Length: 156
Image 1 (cartoon, rainbow, N blue to C red):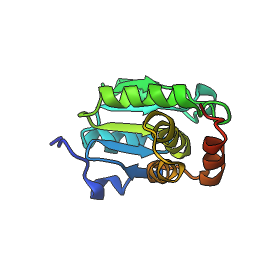
Image 2: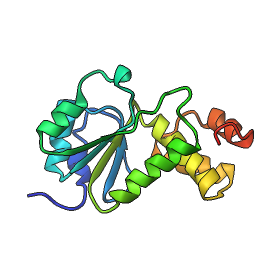
Image 3: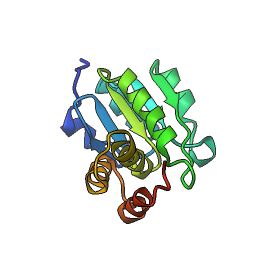
């Protein structure tokens, strides 16, 4: 039976790092085929991949679509892909799927957390401290680096 919310106990079987953001959204690292199956059983209908193809360890797109699941790629480069335009693109995709179960991933969740911090700071006008805190909740690990870059206006 497919539910409309994630079952935390079943998600504990995922091999990738992950964070449950809401009843509809899980953010994590690159999933394995087994992870895709677990997420599908949980009712996930949409996968968003933020990894450039050259960084992927396997063809997630083909496998996910073969499972009759939806897939969107937002290729975010590790070094120069963290900026407001990409943060706005990501937020637009998330808004479009706000009431569907979504698995959003990059390699570890760090890129996604950084984009969320950028969105919080520039688009929503939150303080750098608040933006970094929200980004950290989403998987941001490079807190100091992103905080400094926000304050210096380098991610606009």
